[in-house]
Length: 409
Image (tube, rainbow, N blue to C red; front, side):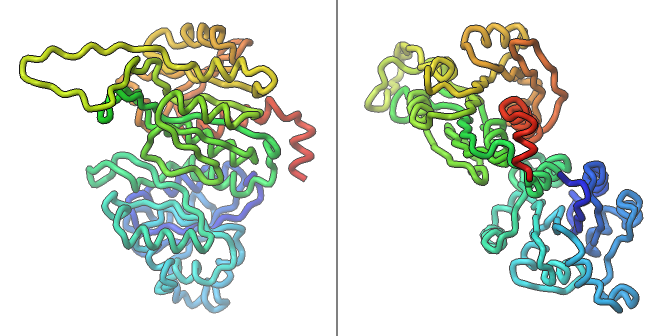
């Protein structure tokens, strides 16, 4: 999708700039031509020589260059590209973009362009959460500037939170979606479940599963990126709604099943949610009180509805492709194969969620695709990449090659 595309990469001064050479390399590997503009502060983290070597093009950094500006270089740079990509996009450069400042080559190019602009924010969590930054983000998105990320994770400052720049491979995926004229899943309806479920014990306590929802949300966004009308039924998470996706928020397994049933018919169902297997048989209407010397009250559990099995047996409204997830801590492949047979779904995505893997709440995943034909091991990759690869596999399975080619015309 990036073959022949011209990307103007604007690198601003954040620690994430050290990833810029890798980003350039990945973009060029996908067929894009990349030209780089750097701010002065960006050169504190990566050199123009490094970006010039991987881009095989001149790197621009001087608004007052006598040679470049003799021909109004900032205007030409802004108009030669198919897209402008700001990565990393620091709080500082986004503030200047929001207020129309043009005090260096990078911001002048951004103000002079008539081409689409994408930005990959990167900053400390406190800076990301600041009202000024959020107001600037709102201003930029209202103008049509698309944000790629940020992610939640460890930061160079030692803190943890939202504000980390997404990985270069995920930025490449975002650009592929942006340029993707082919919409192989256009006209298809995809139903995705994500996150945990909360099963109340009383008004203040509940049973839950450990799930951030990152994988399910990534799958929903990837399916929407391939043109599917996508319904995401999500348990409680801290994640923003994926772009272009219809989100239905629920809490319990019963609510999730009701929302899924209401969303039918669908062509695709991906059950990525970590649904609690059990719920309290008798939910207390008032908070259960504890007094000194009391023994714990008995907790009687009853089985929750099986959403994956229900969708697999939905009769005339059964989706053409029903995919479940198997979160395992041992015998991952064997348990997933047994689940595939038991649930009567079409595919199972199996992964190891043992504590040492860091899969729950993490940004990466190692999965195995289990089908009736056998198992396929995927390498460790970001959850965004897993979502994109699964969505593409779904498209390749449901849409004949000729039909997909015709849709690209």
